[in-house]
Amino acid sequence: MTSFPAWYFDEFKMAGVAFHDAAQVEVYDRNQTSSTPEKEQALVTRLEISTNHSVIDLGAGTGNFAIQAALTGAYVYAVDISQSMLSYAQNKAQKTGVTNIKFHQAGFLTYQHQDQQVDFVVTKNALHILPDFWKMAALLRIAALLKPKGVFYLRDAIFSFPPADYEASINEWIRRVAKPEGTGWTAKDFEMHVREEYSTYTWIIEGMLTKAGFEIVEASYNTPTYAEYLCIKSS
Ligand SMILES: C[S@@+](CC[C@H](N)C(=O)[O-])C[C@H]1O[C@@H](n2cnc3c(N)ncnc32)[C@H](O)[C@@H]1O
Image 1 (cartoon, rainbow, N blue to C red):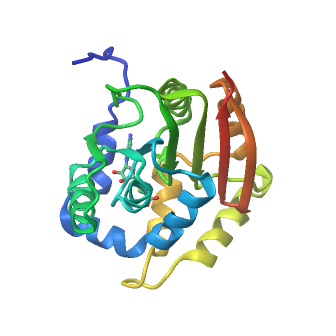
Image 2 (image 1 turned 180 degrees about the vertical axis):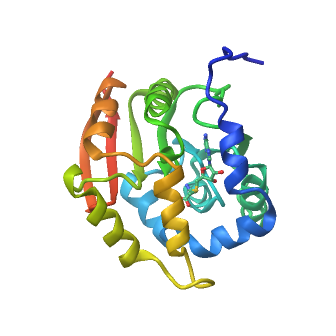
């Protein structure tokens, strides 16, 4: 058991608020249309994940990406801080019959990998849960999980709008994506995201990726409020 200093970030406290029980997880799974099995399968194909590869999914949520990666024959470590998320994902994995996924209740800052370094680390829609100082620590830990030249894929709510336009950009984002109650993520959900979570700018994330030892080989700003990065561990 590793012990952390008294000043260490308590990531377990954070996540408990968001996904406390099975009912919340079920609503989450319904609303999270960016993570359907079809979309995750497309990502697995794009990353060229296949048998003999090892993959860590950090903040794995309800498991769609981890399951699609495991279906290729890759060995997958699905890591999430929320036991409710993991139980839901585990149940889904059982239904598909995949057995090559190991589930771990841990987070970016606490996961202790017991096996060899892996070929891929993926994290989607989760890194924003950490303040920037701790995002940097998380990225350093991610680099340490990867083999030399290993691949890191990051997707998240990351802002590429000009900082001076922050007010209009956030309002426009919420106006564009929020759905009526009961049909998806609502304006309240997005408002809470901006107010209480830690989405930051692309140029900050890019500086951190480089300082953590990654080469950014692809950067896409799909919209002014989402970004994805394909990175290679430099050495
Ligand atoms: C918005 S969900 C994204 C899930 C999935 N990756 C997806 O794309 O649908 C964020 C996930 O991160 C998990 N989480 C929260 N804090 C975390 C932390 N410190 N370390 C790892 N995972 C965390 C939550 O429990 C949740 O499952």
